[in-house]
Length: 540
Image 1 (cartoon, helix red, strand yellow):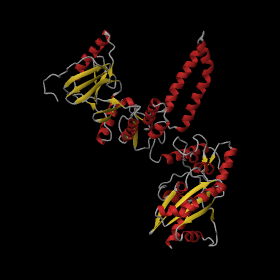
Image 2: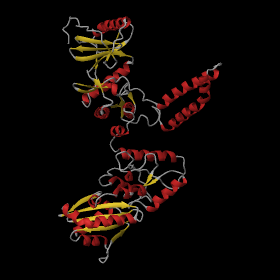
Image 3: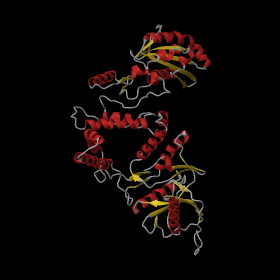
Image 4: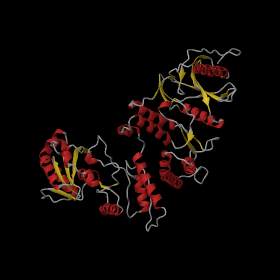
């Protein structure tokens, strides 16, 4: 605060031009530029008198002046928006500051309370808090990751009640497409009406119509998916999500006090994914479209389930005008990772004849084993396993062939283990896919190898069987079991070592005691088939 009746103190240092973000711009060295800078500063002196601040020093530039004041570092810049927009921006910033999740700029009101002031020409200016620092480093991995984390926290405080006054109309892709289509039509009209055309204009005229037709088709397709604001269902939500609108590395600053997010002038009602898209696009563009960086930046809660449900919604959209001779339900269930309560409840309620579970699987990447992944863009993957109806899996394959859809069979891709096991020791094979369990005071472990070749499984058996007892002793196990699973025949041969290990297997699966080799038809899952039966046998 300034004592009443005193004049503001304004010290003008050397002429240093800055960008809109407050960073120095090399001087052009022209007399005209110096003159312009002086005029801007003179206007700023008069306008800054309308604020209760004491200005100690300024650094000026075109359209923005950084001020060192008794209230800290502030920035004074032009404002071209409306009164409603700056009031919304101020509310969002105050709400963000109260939440304390991310440090954001704040608008400093003038002495009479207005959020911006105007000069004699009617140009509006706004005063905001500022932080000296540098932009987020686009080539610094940790800083890129932190920018995404900041965005997630920022969105945690950018929801307003739906009845908040002066909330702007949500961004409409349809209107945006219509605007660009009108521009394209004006260009086409100009090309048609122009008499003498250059070579480029003639070539453009010939190639123009297909582009315009595609743009119109995309717009029409979008209309089928989007609801305009004000239409039924558009205003049913209790809250409205806002996004920064220009969330990119220029507006994410790192200074002595940490990270600071600025320039909320483009704050708008839209899906928060808009901010994430803009940030990712900028960071990946500067990072030479690095796939590993993109994989690290893009993550989210239950992202796999959300992808699966998005596919189901698309299926419903495609089937909406197709007559069906069955009742079709789509279910998004909960607690999959614990005890599948959501799916169980729905299954009892609906009692379906068939069920198709839609999920993601493992895509190929430089750091992943080739026999455990699938080529991105290689088509859907059809699962084959103990909890899958075999007839349904093969029926899906037949339908894909009829529809000429490329698919991959999960069994054929995931269980090509032979090449992966060549050169590995018996110890490595035993514990390549190994789980340990405890029942009462009994500790046992189960290893497993899956293959499509019986010959290959025989070779593995010859290497592993003599080593099992040593592996059991070295790892302090009471019993050790090993599954040699043939995914094509859907059967497993069981190897074991340890006191009573063989007897427990025979009791668990009601096998004949005189069997030399323990083969289990239809048993391919350690988690769902082998371990539950063993646990029950050990508890008896």
